[in-house]
Each structure stands twice: as structure tokens, then as C-alpha cells.
Image (cartoon, rainbow, N blue to C red; front, side, top):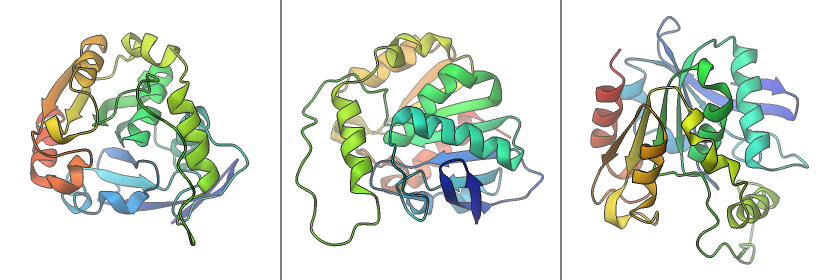
Length: 225
């Protein structure tokens, strides 16, 4: 399905009962809404699920501007255009960072927040932009470069404003096989007033794909419908 937003046409996948409570899924960098396919059928048994291709990814618009803030604003425009008042927001990796900074400004729109192996960027690590892969890509390379630059030099407010998130929050860690340093996600959960941390040991970074059953258990336990 497609929806027109200010930045262009955006693609999304909708599943579930239209009368069920809404859930919005945000994918990671170089990914698309398809990343959620291992868990979408089960989620759609409880929620009306909207999986969005974020700008520069999948079948959504390629734009002249890429940033976490622009993607945050896309989410607000997307839910407003679809008439979603309050919803459960789930983000993985880059999408989790987008979800966190959305929640810092718009917690009143959320029934809950799920951050999947994704802290706000803190500038730590090596974010040197690698050479562009050969051939055609299913994402905009300009987006990749822009996001890497923000990962290297993030806005300090993204961490400082975590206590402003008032929505119930679930932080999911992929454990020791994740590239996220082990101390980071516990600190995220500590700073958000109503947050719980669940570690799925051995799941790695793409928790919803490697351990879909445990991922679903974590989400439905924290957010029963």
C-alpha cells in the first residue's frame, strides 16, 4: 500500500483486524518492511500492524534529505495521514533510534514503545563510511552515508531526553552476540521512567528474525491486549 507524504510516496504493509489496536513497525538501515515478516502474522493476531518502508528504503521515496529527525517527522505525518491517534511503536536498529526520538517528543501518541537492540546513537564506535557496494541497491546510498554521519556525531539531546519518554517501554537486547555494547541498553532502560529490559541471549542484532518466538513472547508479555 502507498501513502503520499510531504517527502513523496511511501510504501507500507498493513495486516490485522482494522478494529484492533494499531502497531507501527520501523526497520533498520539498509532494510525494509520485509524484515518483520517472521513476526508479522503473529503480531497481526493481536494488533492492526503497519510496517513502513522508511525514506530511502524499499519502495518508499528517495529524497534529498536524510536524517533521524526527518524519519521521525515522517512517522508523525504517516500516522496522522492514516488517522492513527495512539499506537504501539516498535523500532529495530536505525528504526529504534527513530522511535526513541519520536517518543521523546510525542509520548502522548503512544500506547507503548519497543526498542529492539537499539539505543539512541552516542557517537561511540567506528562509523567510517565504507565504499559503496557494487551494483544496484534496494536502498539509497545517500541515506546510508547521512545516517552514518549522524551515528558518528549524534545530537546529545537524544540521550539527554530519554527521561521525557512517558510511554511504557520495552527494551530488547540480543545479548552477547549483539554488536551493541553490553552496558548501553541497560542504561537506556534505566533512563526511561517506565521501561523494562529483556535480554534474549544469543539472538544477536536482528532479534525478531533470529529468535521470533522469544521476541513475540517479550512483546506480548509487556503489552498484553
